Image 1 (spheres, rainbow, N blue to C red):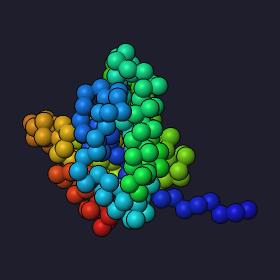
Image 2: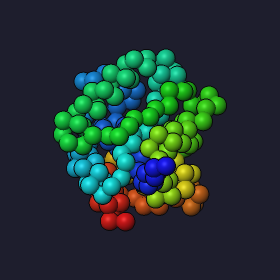
Image 3: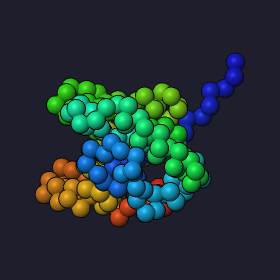
Length: 188
């Protein structure tokens, strides 16, 4: 019997407002714009040994604003762009459901994380979730890892929600962007 590969940690990265510029219900390739420092962040995390998994809530599908085929084209374009820049993702997972649907995959639920854990043999306790919404850092905490909050995208607006929560919403760390978060994660 061969050995099972050792479990490795991952960084679960939000798409809109964290990896690419925020655009409500993005469904067109032309609207994909990387946030400054995102490529460098992915390269740094890859060198540090992390699996790079993008996880994104895409309720525009459930709302009827765009189709899964349109989303697939956007993700193929984004994947090719990152690969060309030497910063390929290991996988992309998305939740297509309307927020009112009772699904297990919508962040901060663990459906996407559990699928990635199974596919990539991940150690969730040594993993991180990074994003510009409370649901992103809550995902990290819900999986038993760390939840990192960034101030890009909706981050500044969401920070007000965190501050007014009187400690009920509390990320493990807050950084100005994905690159700053990646530098910290890579040192852990």
